[in-house]
Each structure stands twice: as C-alpha cells, then as structure tokens.
Image 1 (cartoon, rainbow, N blue to C red):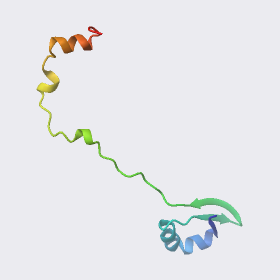
Image 2 (tube, rainbow, N blue to C red):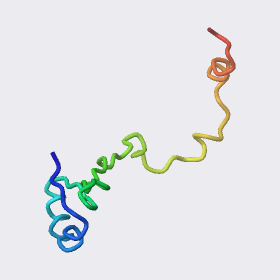
Image 3 (cartoon, helix red, strand yellow):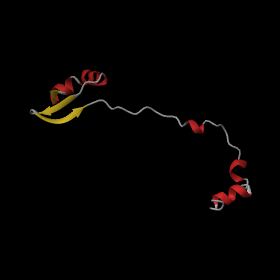
Image 4 (cartoon, rainbow, N blue to C red):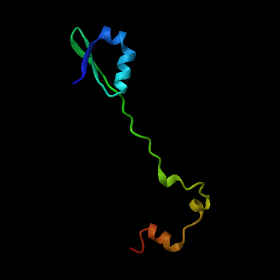
Length: 80
C-alpha cells in the first residue's frame, strides 16, 4: 500500500519523494487527511525499431516500373 503524506510534507520533501518513486515506491498525497493524488513512476514502454526498414535506400524502379503481366493479373484478381 502507498505511503500517505500530507501536502505540506510533500512540498517540503518533493525531491526525496521523487527519488523514492524512481526506486519503485508510491505515495498518496492527502489534504486534511483525505487522499487527493497519487505520486507514481511513469513507466514508458521500450522503444522498438522496425527491423524491416533496415534495407537501406530503395530505388525508384521498385515502385514505378510496371509489374510483369502475371503478377499484375494476380493483383487484379485473376488466376485464383
């Protein structure tokens, strides 16, 4: 369960509380004994690289040359 701290204590000890949050602790900030906020770490997902884009430059001919007739026929729904 998260430790509860009052607003004044949180203001006074914010740097310390943030360091503890970075280590995995959680805090509830309360005003007059009533919880109003939670102080928790933000967990960002690891960055992922798209492996299929590591091909290097792709020549324009790959995109702009006409398709061979047999492949064009498959794209147009023929030959199924």
